[in-house]
Amino acid sequence: MSRPSATTKRFQIFLIKPSHYDADGYVVQWLRSTMPSNSLAAVFSLAKGAAERELLGPDLPIDVYAIDETNTRVRPRDIARLIEKNGGLGLVGIVGVQSNEFPRAVDIARPLREAGVQVLIGGFHVSGCLAMLSEIPADIKAAQELGISIYAGEAEEGFEEAIVDAARGELRPLYDHMKHLPDIGDIASPPFLPVDFVRRTIGNVTSFDAGRGCPFQCSFCTIINVQGRKSRYRSADSVEQIIRMNYAQGVNRFFITDDNFARNKDWEAIYDRIIKLREVDGLNLGFCVQVDTLCHKIPNFIDKSRRAGVTRVFIGLENINPANLIAAKKRQNKITEYRKMLLEWKRVGIITYAGYILGFPNDTPESIRHDLEIIKKELPLDMLEFFVLTPLPGSEDHKVLHEKGVWMDPDMNKYDVEHVVTAHAKMTAAEWEGVYQTAWGIYYTDDHLETILRRAYASGINIRSLMPVLFWFSSAVPIEKLHPLQWGIFRLKYRRERRSGLPLESPIVFYGRYAADIARKTVLIARRWWHLKSIVRRIEADPNAKLYMDGSLTPVAEEDADHMELYTQNDAARVAVEREHRVAGHRGHGAVGNGAATNGHHHGNGHDAGHHDHPTHDEARPVAPLPA
Image 1: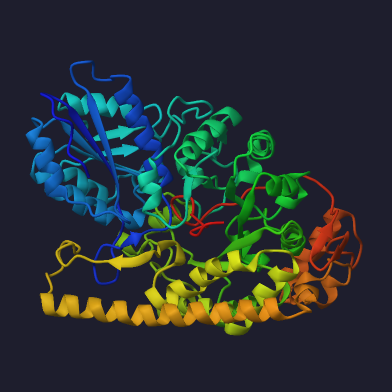
Image 2: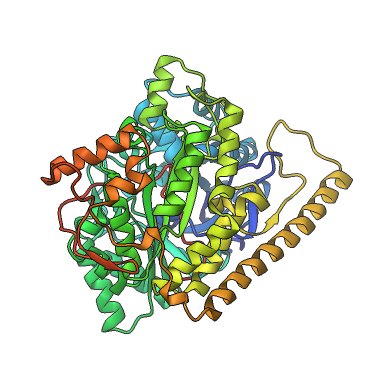
């Protein structure tokens, strides 16, 4: 963090994206983290735009600094001293704060407030609580009692008001912009972060949103209640502007954070613009997008994804039990479409990720294990990542439990979709937590790792590109005890940066354990990397590897409904299949799909409107931690 420019009076804005605490109370931080924060990029650009337009007048220029705590140490007292040297003119904005980051955000703010620095906290946690709860919850009230101001809603049309108030020393306790959703079509300052931020992450990847909001009603989702049920989109011109700004500084890989890019009404115009940039202008671009399970029914969507440079796609699969999907109001997911959709992505050689939620009402440890074996055998997925069903503040699930007075863990640090925070009708907390931990090992067995790579090789996917990503998703939980999206390269820990209320450990205990952890993890990482490398070499040396075929890669056919466990696993699955047949005009045991496929190359399955998927995180999930 550089010092402000030397001048008589300059207004200092520090924007901080906080991390969260691990099980021992230390900040989760890395030498290089997964990906730059889209929320930080959006607010940073707005603040820089205000500075360039001299929002506070020519006599009070603005300096803007941004810090991502997942890869950069935050020193609140140093920030306070810099602002004090500038006459106390400054604002610290803690941005994009998710529920599990809120305790850390308050700990960052506390010494700043003690020094008299104005602090504003925004993000999904405060916005979701104000959107769904009749009263402000205790943790936000406690923050306000410290003099921390709260910003609820999106920043495009309200953040400048807070800057002006802060410059007057009159920051209000609450800025509530939840009832107004700004137009993001062609804003003057779209999301952008300098290349230095990208270099502190893994791969040459940055992120931006091409759209916000969702019209559907998944009960576990916070996006529909924070960003609204009316979808809003950036124009193709704005997307091109974002891409060109990043390309000019050497950044050419992008994660489009839209909850479901397939339902962006301007997806084709955006893709056509990107295709022009790639095929006419010669820009080397790569993308990862999030889509739903019916995206393959949109004419040209998958083929244009490939032409636009999409190399990875995240799919909100969530579950294979129709009863669970209905309970979560995720009726748009049809198990009869899963194989057709995945085979279409295989056809164009794009790597697939899917999210899978554990803890729906009908789940038990046994049913989860059984479902995962079905997925391994019958669905041609590459990466599968797991989440604990969590009543995130801002979701309908959280509101219902809150209003019924059902116990939920008061520690927001646990609301990371990796911890159990409420009760389940069919599992104890220990069973639920246990099956989450074991799910990774059930899916990523040595045999299935080889199966995934063989399927990919036979489908024309570059398995040397797939291998690092497969390593990442299969290794994070057993090695680091963290979700892959929370992992990074080389864990950084500071003895004095521990959660408030926990004791300061002695140097011998702290550094001894830290050194032992580094040694242990280094050995495990090396072993797992070389093991995967050996599988890749074995496949590449196999003269018949291109001919690999198993049940998941076979063409979708009428008889699938009779013999595949995906469709016969329980009464709910059988009923769902019969219902889909009736809707499609089939009788009796009609086809679960149609069309022809060879070695995973599936062709022609009809085209009609699909629906929308939602991430389980408060903020859209980054799913491409490594370069394409």
